[in-house]
Image (cartoon, rainbow, N blue to C red; front, side, top):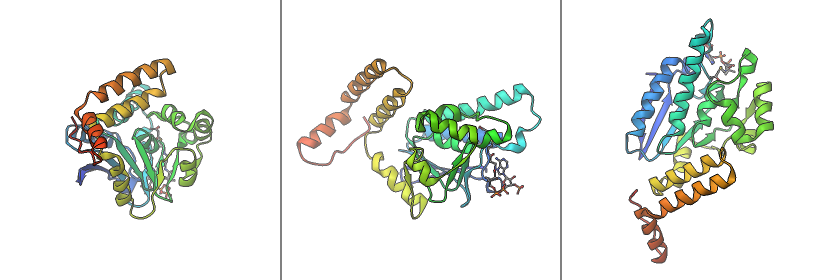
Length: 255
Ligand code: CAA
């Protein structure tokens, strides 16, 4: 299977498993990824981790061999399929963490950018090289990259197709951390930093922050007022505040 879905503690783990093609996103892999995301959404996993099989690549992007000699209609449908899968990932009810364990190019970086967090191994390299193929990114790259790194750096990456190393990606805010040591163990430790909090309240937090970037400030503040009031109505907010008063650790029930 080009997609492997497994469980690690209370987390789901998706591995892109086409190492012979550097885990490139064939259309069949994309469809399997969509189905795996649906399975994760319906499960009781508290977070999703995504990584690539092998020590060379997270994902080298769309499968270039499938892109040649397609009709414009087929090409547009392909972009829409890729975007829909990335959107499903972006809108999962739980947070997602990309473990960028090598190259993340084109659709591979677009996949990582649709995750809530990105962690990179020290030798990881990322980029949107589509321009070198006479193309531009089609799975969300032109839209998600400027939201993460700003317009100037996004234009530099999209228009030069340059490769960015892990240190630069960290400096630019494109990745949250560089992992030293076993990538999966380190990523699990990172995920545990937030996953014990109330799941519905984590969902409100993600929603509020995500909407900040495409909403005028006065609208965003209204969204924050609504979502923070909803959080206040949860049983977990009662438990969290009671635990503070009683000087003990909170025991959230995701209610
Ligand atoms: N699609 C299909 N096959 C790919 C691939 C891709 N994106 N990337 C690598 N492969 C295949 C290679 O063809 C090769 O297969 P063969 O052994 O059968 O020839 C195998 O994976 C190993 O790759 P290399 O021999 O090229 O490995 P390398 O270490 O020399 O180079 C690399 C690694 C720099 C990542 C190089 O493979 C490369 O540049 N890949 C293409 C990256 C790219 O341009 N990605 C963007 C794709 S377009 C896109 O993603 C559009 C979008 O927005 C959705």
